[in-house]
Length: 278
Ligand code: FES
Image (cartoon, rainbow, N blue to C red):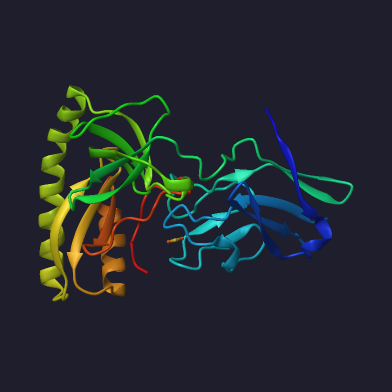
């Protein structure tokens, strides 16, 4: 069911410009796109890059194209399509004008800060610890294994404890999807060959190129779409180039992630990173 909410007067956004509005704690970027002599069109998206959450309203672009200011992924604000990684589209909202007022269909926007059932969870091969939300009636106990939705995709985690969010002040790093099953264990076992192969391949390339980077671990996320290589060393363009080369050679998205940084919270339905360079 649609839920049309007025954002503001259309005259607030001049042709070719954009503006951010906040609805229920969610940032909505509205773009006023003009195409030659055609009347302008308004498009609304969640102002949160699906990669690592940057504000897209700050990005460069013409027409319906927008480039993320952080790592240059490019998107079409009309269709939501991500040109670089089509599996990571923008969240877009239907827009209409009524008497010069911009309205968006906010039915898909959830109220922020109302997480009632939070758990402290350890996840990822690096053992990060963060809060995750669960269905209101879900109950988990210490050491239960679960499947999580994080900013990187679907991952396996382990419950440490339940947690309270004082005055809803905690923003979870993602959500708990379900319990881990024996069938999930079989999936995990099949991933070991993948990670060993990618790890070795990457180490060889780094050595051949004399890069001052040490790959210290590797994991394939549970959704089997992304392989994360953890590294010691500074961020450098050469790593981004290597990620692009590996992405062209493998069926999975290859991501480099510094060992000393936890993943971003998944406030924007993101699925991780293509380069992790900041
Ligand atoms: S945060 Fe947008 S491309 Fe990385």
